[in-house]
Structures are given as structure tokens and as C-alpha cells.
Length: 477
Image (cartoon, rainbow, N blue to C red; front, side):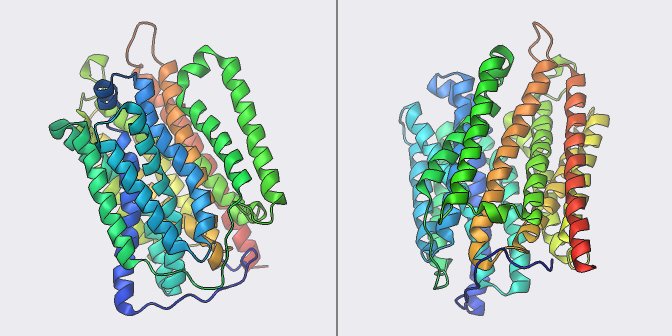
């Protein structure tokens, strides 16, 4: 993209040697993979948590929700801190918090401590944007673009790595063994960061807008709460609608605070840039669709044969269905930097959204055989991988180097909210398709959810094409 950065001055990056570069790239990948995989540990363990701690499934669900919440709040804060001179210290301190949280999940403590540990692990999700900032500052421009794309992909396919491993350990070693995996890999990530992450370039400053952070946290808490509490929408619609309005008001208040602040948590003016706004819209709607299909396939695979469909897979075997998602997602991430030399990033976003839509169509039309679920998951992974790899290029083309972490952090907040809503929408559609007295929804409910997903990806495709047309008009006046 030929547009100019949205404000800010360039700061000379500190040079790194060729040997340091060889160590830096795998280190950035490993850290991004670890924080994503550890965050996903809660997904296959919800039932085990409910059984082990004698709590309801709704309460156990918070071991996943609290991760999304703390990650969504921490991401813009860490992005702002990562824009300053103390980025290395911020990364190390954050990983130390994640390690401490991982220890809390392993120790034989009450349920409240497990939630506290999971919240601390969720803070690590904010590191992905910082890894991109490090790559952009310390790698050659042509290399940094490819590395940033892969970091974006790894941050998503980490779920496909963590899910089956956690399920396997839980099956044979119990809940604490599964969470013990998180402690081991986060400690390794902390050591890796200490050995490999360089200091940030000089001449930068960063201040955190505390008021904006508190208001944003309150708004996101309401959004994620409403996304997770499906019964509230079905039984107390007026209350749910009132809380949704309150969340919207808080987001508006937060935007006003950011616009008036001299040191905003997120530069809302930069976010309003057409390219950035369009990319975030595509990420939000696309995130809803992507996570919807991921939820549908894993739930369908675990539905027992007695429901008239499904395969009755155990949690571990169902986790193996995610392998095509991870493998093809990574392949798309490796392929995208080569393709983007010929095809503009917005067109890659549109093409990837079409691929994800194809995954929905495949799931809607053919799911009677397990191989068809693997195929749909592979198509989803390839589409998600391409989408994630192309997204940073759209945003960073109009973002100065010093604002890389901050700009991408907001995109990841948008993605987290989109994922949460995708999971909630899937649950609501399946709940609506569950007849009175039945435990499982009708098979047709999955088809309905797939059609909704196709609609979401169609909107994402149109938003991406609009970005492509705008770029074309700028480069060919």
C-alpha cells in the first residue's frame, strides 16, 4: 500500500547481527505459539473443571471467558507499553505474570485461585502484538513482513496445538497434569524471551491511559459476559438488552476519552483511517464466522450417535480434528508472503474469506463422514491462515513503526470480541434448534448455523473488496 503512516515519526531501530536474527525469529514464533496454546487450554477442560471443583458448567466456562477478558483488556495496555522504550521489560514482566498464573492452575488451591491463574495466563495474549513490533523494528523490511504474517497465523493455530495436548494429558494424568503443560511451556517462553528479545529503539515514550483502560475493561466485561450467558438472552431478554445498551454506552464513553486524551490507550483517530477501520470491520465479522465454524465442527464431532448424527468422539479424539486446521493454517501463513508480492493484501483477505465460506458450505452439505469434518476443518484452517497472514499488512501499511504494537493490539481486541460473539451465536442457534425435552439440537440447526456463517463471510469478503478498491483508486488516480 502506498499510503503514508498515520502520524508519528520514524525511529531508527537498533541493529541486530545475522546470528541474533536467526535466534530472534524462532523465539518470536515460539512465544506467540505458547501464549495462544496456553489460552486455549481451558476449552477441552471445562467438564473436568466442573467435576473436579464441584461447580456448574456455567461457572467452569469462566476458566475460558476470564482468559478472553483479561487478554482483551491487557492487549491495548501492553500495546501502548510496547510502543515505549521499556518493551523488553514489559515482555519479560508479562511472561512472569503468565508463569505465576500457570503455577496457580497447577497448585491444589480452591476454584477462585484457578480463575485467578487463568486470568493471569490470559494477559499473555497481549504479547502477540509486541512480538510483531519487535519483528518490525529489528528485522529487514522484506523479512519482517513475512515474520509478522506468521506470528499472526501462529497466534490462531496455537489453539489447534493446545487443545489435543491438553485433552490427552487430562485423560491420562488428570486436570492438574493438563495445566502443568502450561507451566512448563510458559517457563520455557520466559527463558526464551530473556535470552533473545532485544531492547527497543531509543527515542520513544509511552504513557498508559488508566481511565481509558478501566472504562474499556468494564465495557469488554459486559460484552464477554453477554456473549457467554446464553440463558440470560432466552430467559431475561430485557435484562440482557439493557446490559448490551450499557456496554455500547461505555464503548462510546471510552472513544470520547481516547479522543480527548493526549496519551490515548488506542489512537482512535488512527483507527478511523479507512484502511484500518475497514480491516478491523473485516476482522470483527470474519472472526465471528471463523470461530462459529470451529465451534460447530468440534461440537458436532463430540455429539453421540444417539442424537441421530455426530460421531461420539472423546475430547482427545475430537481435538485431533483440529490438526488439519493447524497444519493447513500454517501452510497458508507460509504461502501468503510469497503471494502478496503479486496480490494486494485486501484481495488476499477477500480470497481467504471466500475460502472460509467454502468451509461452511462443505460442512452444511457433507458431514455424514468423519473425513468430511477433517476436510471442512482443513479448509477453515487454510482460510483462517491466509486471512490472519494478510491482515497485518493492511493495517501496518498506514502505521508508523513506533505504533506497530498499539495498532495491532486494537485489531486483536476486535478479534477476541468477534470470536466470543461467534461462539455465542453458534450456541444460540443450536439452542433454538433443540426441541423440548431433547438434550441435543436437531441436525438441521447445524445447517442453519452454517448458513449464518456463510452470510458473515460474505460481509467480510465485501468489506475486504472495498479496501481493495480504495487501494486501487489511490495507486491509479
